[in-house]
Length: 422
Length: 153
Image (cartoon, rainbow over all chains, first blue to last red; front, side, top):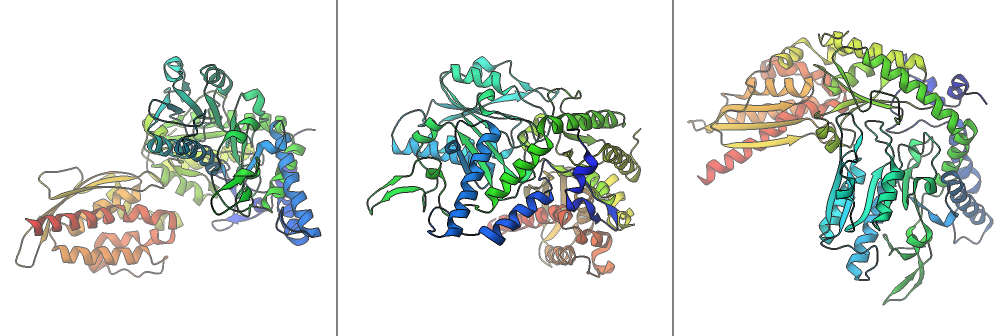
């Protein structure tokens, strides 16, 4: 099936609306959150209109249907990322919660003194990278503070690639876990996860992959990546907000202590103690985002129909075009790889004399929605020597005309602020 | 066009040629405020002197990194407040804060707010209000610290 962007755009009702006094919406902020196709919106309405009930506990027909929809979504997710079985898929609120789940489970293991591979203490190390989103930095900082473990990190090169030259010094027998992004939300850089995972496993460490920016855009297989944990979020992949996924290898999820305690995650509760349900339910306390699960499954179905390889190829064309168009603009610096190699469809940049906030304001005036600031990656911006940047991020519904409109809007901002461009 | 109503010429002038910029000695208090949304930051120092009418703002010096709105706001603030009694400066702060919270409905008094009336258009853009307020919040914080130090001395 050929990739037909005009047909795809018709699936997204929001693309029909106008902004800022009648201008067509040019939505280049999908790395922040993606828009939703009609098929996904319908799935959400259908659940509430026809099947709504609580799951796993209602002994009536609606309860059975709701449970089947929720657990069916788990199986859909498992198939989508190549999980060995649905029980390896834990639903979370978002990926931040998924990462915190692992971090808090590790500190619970440490506090319970149960030992094992999840218990941390002084002398143990967690390794992350400088290009992480805050959600893959702060939970590990907090974990290290709680346990006395040490946080270490890979640096980035001036070109915006991961600097792996000191990998042997960073990943050692002291390393308990390596956590890294599959694709940078700022630079678009796709990291060599497999090579790093192999090194981590050789040292006896576990590997957690933040796949929030890769799963929406390319086929991702947890086994091929060599991950032990992998997280992503629904709302960046045409799905709803409020639901994310943490995949973990079954034997690890079995061994890990719970994170949140509450209803539905138990096996038996006495006043003195409790025992816990097997995974994934051990990690799903309280009423979950029930309607969001089949809605996420609908998003996965939608992406499957479009075809992720075709989508990836199309986005490659968009980012190649964007890199070329933006590199022709004077006084503009692209953060991250200048070549469209191992690079996703997000492009962050700075323009001399026009602060990113002002840039995004001018673009917004032209109906172009981008993000300005540090994009929840402040350490990365400091490492790149900039205070903030403007980010345009593309998805399956964007067009080459929109890339040209972006370039035109940037030049307009330069004119407005009296900065010499080109 | 809306852009011109947001970026009034006065704002762009202050942005390109900020007044009282740079960090100066001596000072009574220094604060660093950041806008966690966008990473804008300002380091701001306040120097007070005593007068019959109570403490007076002798100097405001600052180092601001940020967008045109936040930089221009620091410049306008220093123009307005340096040389005034602290009590008057606090009243100006309150006036400016009310203007920023007016959602575009405010009718600022130029006799009171001077160049700061140019920021009226900012109040229509929720994402930019913090930019305009950053230096003012820093000034209020630094001044409170300096007053505390004065009282203890």
